[in-house]
Length: 265
Image (tube, rainbow, N blue to C red; front, side, top):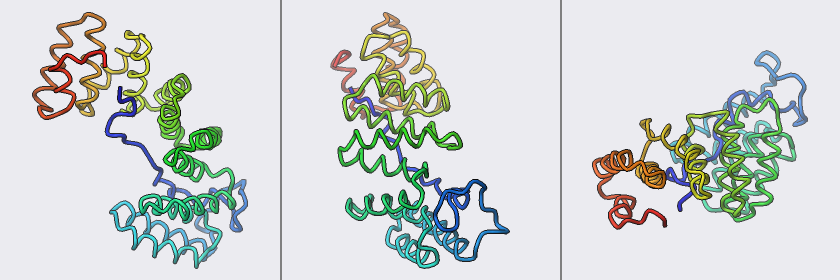
């Protein structure tokens, strides 16, 4: 059962630059009061603007250009944590784990409570099969009461816990994520899949039906819905979902599995 699902759509936090000037003090220490534009030093402002530009290049897949902008940001302010976080993400994509980890560590040396640094470093650790360390960092990020990305981090924590075989913990993480953001398809899908896996079809049905009623439904979600409805002996609903699967995703592996009757694989 592919529990992560939804195209493994996780992931990383590139929203780390919105309001980032207020996450740490001028010299990198935690600040009780956010820095506003009027009292932001010129060096910090230049670093922030360069990092914002680097983020745009990163999101367009222009990693080399993004790295150059990050270098300029750190020339302006060597203690600007978000630049190190973004550098870690760029090196992750460039498959350079050494420089990626060094970047995340530098960010956390500047501000050990930065939730975006904790989230992204956690995802890095999960990607290199250091799940226990990753889960600890996700938990630290979520513990920050002012962190607006808790739903995203809980979802990612759940994905990492699945990879570690911690299915009960993963279910709890996805449930908490879903409570905070019921529109997240990864949380909804995985929660339904985990519940179905341990025989709680009625609860699983609730989550998968809500997801399949949206435009975010795909071959994976429809196939899971078919298996859940069949287990609950709702053949008419299962047939309706199968028709959608055949019409919308005629070349999918899920339709092939349906045709060979692999309902319990």
